[in-house]
Image (cartoon, rainbow, N blue to C red; front, side, top):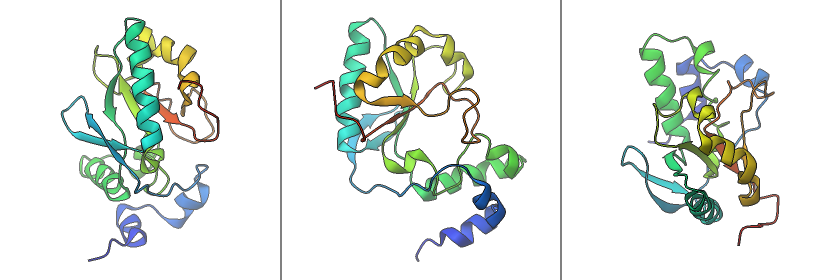
Length: 178
């Protein structure tokens, strides 16, 4: 059976009005992915080959600076994004609240295989406290060298809440880490 995104979005309560108001660009789901090892929860992760090379180089540079960067999540399929939203709806959260922290399926950078959620081994993952860790400061100072940028800084125009842990690899700049 074929996955019908339009139907699933309607079932989730994501109307045409939500989609029309979404300031984020649509993101195609990447199919050119490589194994990137296990994440913090021992789940296998995938990302694009270029992202993987840059991630390995950035992680090694952080380690040389005495910091450990830990992968929390990478590629997420559109179907998986739908399931994340479905679970939150079952918890009793409103679709408006959910879309403050999760992109509409089809609009998440995670679909591209270039977005990484990172952790530094303290506190709980995917929490604002990450911004207080030296690893976050290091990322702010060094991630661009590896073609990564913070996707959702404070007061960003995407409509997504501030996420200090969410970094995305950019393919529009020449690599400076190799």
